[in-house]
Amino acid sequence: DASVECGTSEHDSITLLAILLLLLWPFGSLALYTSLLAACYRPLQAKTANALTEATAFLHREYKRRWYWWEAVELARKLVLTGAVLLIPEERAFVRLVVATLVCVCYSVAIAIVRPYNRVEDDVLAVATSL
Image (cartoon, rainbow, N blue to C red; front, side, top):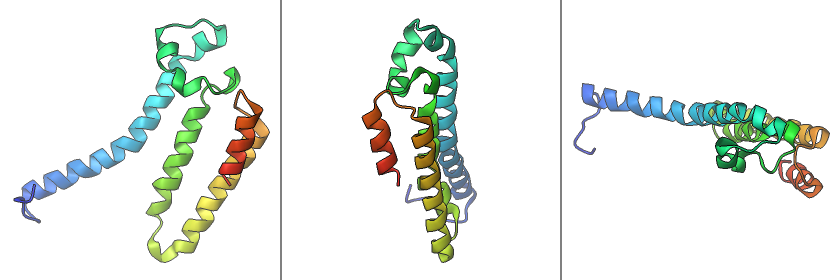
């Protein structure tokens, strides 16, 4: 709202709300993914589909049953690369690059070792694109 002046109590309350929502989005989405996938554990392992596993299939259908939760790892990687790395001050841009590169390399190694995808082509593509 353009009518709100900086430094007023109304501005401070809007700023606080904005900060809370900025924190809620990444942590809330990761918590939501993780809790949905945790709730799907037994039906997925037993190979018995239910309404929840069908509704959340977009989170786990591309992965082997053992690695059904890998989408949460993928989301955490994206959040680190697009959010946490930016918390490093701009004056330390080289550190940002090093941290981001290390995250990408570690993730690529993890995919190469674990091979979480159902299709080998997806594993290879994931390794290649995360470098």
